[in-house]
Image (cartoon, rainbow over all chains, first blue to last red; front, side, top):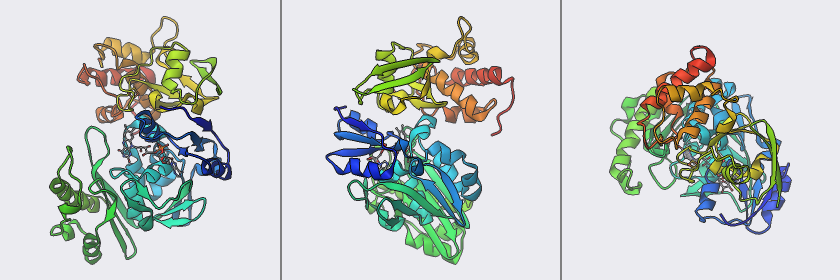
Length: 262
Length: 162
Ligand SMILES: Cc1cc2nc3c(=O)[nH]c(=O)nc-3n(C[C@H](O)[C@H](O)[C@H](O)COP(=O)(O)OP(=O)(O)OC[C@H]3O[C@@H](n4cnc5c(N)ncnc54)[C@H](O)[C@@H]3O)c2cc1C
Ligand code: FES
Ligand code: FES
């Protein structure tokens, strides 16, 4: 790692002003950023640690919307009684990220800001129609994840929390890469009134929805409705872990498993 | 250079460190607590696991400056005098190690697992709990056995809630 300065502000406003200058980067759980800096793929001149900002922590149910602070750790989402009761699909998704030590540090905000093509939280945000709140504005999940490791965030913009509207039914089915535990393919399915969402992570360069599956589930919410629907392998990733064709196949299998589990 | 002060294994420790100093380097190089091993230095193997404020973390993937004021427990902090911690004793008894390189991280992960589950976890839970710890020697069977026995010794055999 190259040298850098370290700051630990106690407010979002101070964090924003510290990141406005130079090549500073926000530090959340560090589970992606620090390994990247060790490899010298990132070389910020300063890190602005968000861990000292109280308003970024915590979980609260307000009416039919679950508010989760950006600095909430994966382990705390997984074990939180409110999340387990109100949105168990999200608790189990968080409990399936990486390993216990990664979950003790990694955060919701860090995960979605990073938008790894194989990360789990982007599927939950898109699959539930969440709203991402920053220090500047509110961004619908549909507009937030813009490409591989790309988001709608501007330089220095800080995610403060994510709002998840509670669905009537929801489930996440993940086929983990056995080595890394990232999603080879993960599918998040939810139903809230007439709004049905199917969001896929791991398969393509960025999390995406499958409108054909959503329409079919709108006619009848059953795994059977998905039997004849396939996604085009042409748009999917191919690497040492799996071919695009295999990933396309897994999208169908995981989507049916998710529907069955709702 | 920023000064960091932590309680490590019950004793206050402080040093002036560069911000880029990893917690693993702080423990090994500044405090000479070399029981915490660095296997991969890429966040994969778990040899470097220590407890920080009661949670198991990979000390190679966090900065010492992040933990000013925190309480850290390393493998050196488990035994009391000549008396091994029940989890250490169980690893010895059940042959849960061969070369021993992964063992400090395995034991710190195991103790954390028992603390979180509050009882003896079943085999599936133990295996899932070891997803962040890699062993090149044992094939894991005896590690799993040792953790079950260590958990029973720590909790008087109470079954975990989940
Ligand atoms: C061994 C291992 C296994 C893993 N397995 C999985 C897995 O199975 N599934 C999965 O989804 N992930 C996995 N991860 C990634 C893990 O979930 C990370 O914690 C996560 O991707 C990044 O979160 P973080 O809090 O550590 O962020 P950091 O690493 O601290 O930051 C990541 C990026 O986000 C930016 N950032 C952080 N917080 C904010 C904010 N509030 N606003 C704006 N920008 C911000 C940072 O500047 C940085 O660019 C794994 C990681 C490891 C090391
Ligand atoms: S040395 Fe930290 S995970 Fe391998
Ligand atoms: S005993 Fe040798 S690596 Fe585990």
